[in-house]
Image (cartoon, rainbow, N blue to C red; front, side, top):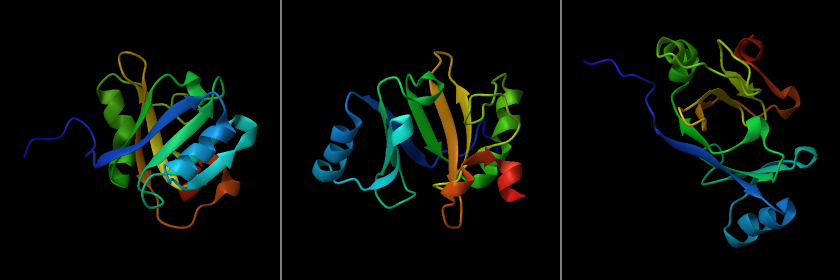
Length: 154
């Protein structure tokens, strides 16, 4: 069997939008579109909405100018955990720099405690931020914040 060039992509996990009024947009996506609020970070001007059941897909809403890594366009692909754990090495082998949640070069996934999910980020040739993401077993631990895989898995 031919080796895949990247992880197995199971679906599109998330997309993000910049909005001019976060409170109004949260109300619209919650009350009109019907998406439940997953997590809000008012001090960062951000809110996340589940699309489908919790952990299946997500919409991020960011007040203009508040998004991380200068959010231009961002796509997150849902992948098996083993593929996310191998993503840094696989990306490097193709000349692509793997990034942490904080946009620093990394050799391991970041874990987003409030979801919880493991993720590796990288940029396409046009600078769009891409992400391989795997939801993790267990309850969310928002108090742990965003940490390296080695710290999470400990």
